Length: 601
Image (cartoon, rainbow, N blue to C red; front, side):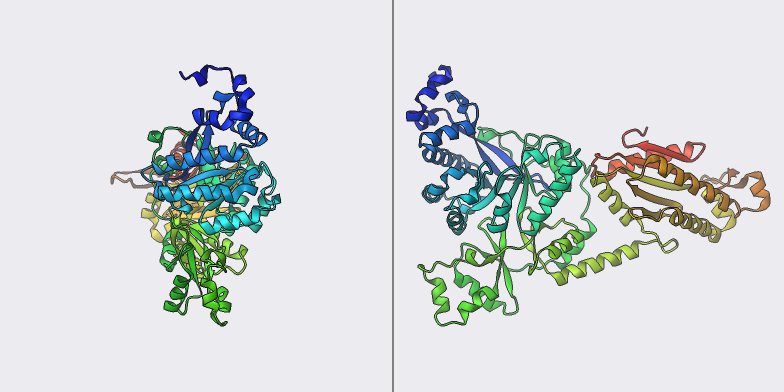
């Protein structure tokens, strides 16, 4: 054990005003906590966190930083920790494709240029691109109230650094930062993430924060994920990146850092499903426009427009291939058409880089739903396109015209999926409804699987025309009793049907289903001959060819209840539970059985 570790904390505090940084060099360490892509489980980057402050008598990093500010050593302390973090980051095998998140104390903003210059010097020596570093502005204080803040952001942007709002939702100037500054990431504070799977207000806030951020071209990071349920909820609500103890705790040992957590991609989903219909259609319409990098010369932009005279804009990326926005031709026309305009742009004194002309654009992953993309367009005025990403990197763009084609083709596919006999949606729509409902845990949901009993002997005896009549009869009764908004009716195929409802009580649903079954049994009995109807049975052959008596046709309904607050993204588990409750219904006397998820046997 070192001598520093065995002294009383008070001894250190007594001499901290003179020797704080010197003591800090002996005991402080940088811990890295992974920030992970929600969809794939791949590590996107690491947040550098200060550790070891307790060895010199401070209960938290914030207390140490406050003391450093008080004694005029905050800049030296932050520079030392930033340099150490960059050195550790450069030792990682995948650092060139990762991002290091560093906290920038608001009290350093008036000295920010000096601080950033030192960071830039270190980056050059370590051969790290500035776009591999993201500075987080903490909301403990109001960053925007500092006079030098706007100039510092402009300068950091010009250098190629990325910017993030930390602790979003509990600070001072988050909305001003979102509105007035080109932020890349928004980190939702742990307060809103804790128990988000059980708290309707938090769910509503997180959903809307994500939507606002995506419209502005900002990616969302959820901080402090501690449970699987919180992770699933954040994934469902569109969060792009996550960090927290559920994924990995901070560590000071580089050897403990993993490049990915692939199991996260499968949590709640069972085996990975194939691409959704939306993603298939979007991939068909995506435009792979060439992109410009923000660190390239203005000449490269002119050349790109010259080679593509019909293209009015191009995506702009940072050195890591992440979207920054778009550059529109009309921004450059005033320089193109005035004397010496192009020379003026290239003049180092005038200093107009590509980043100066970047317009924000909505950014979202390729796996988003078509309606979500349409909503982004509707909420973003004058947006030329939506930038699509795959694994957080630029994948292409989709225009309004292309998106309309996606929506039209999707509607056509849905229409083709409808059963021609009943006009009800088929299996693809049923699967989509179940998945969407499983992910939306704001309300109680019921999945009702309806299956005829003794249909084969009836169909064999009276012919398929009468069998079709029985199927049409049941479909008509379904439509009669289930007509309100939020109700989904589907035809699985043959004599199997599906009913999905939300925000009903079990008592309400039980009453309607009993009436449905009663009416169907009365009506379908009229399809038999008087003799067979009186006898209550029909002679026929079973699936093995053996002749025997069968009861009259009836319908069995197994109802699976997903309680409010239960979030599921695993259709395999849902399907298995439905199959179990359906089997129980067929064995029951009344033909109607309810079971909550997890209660089936």
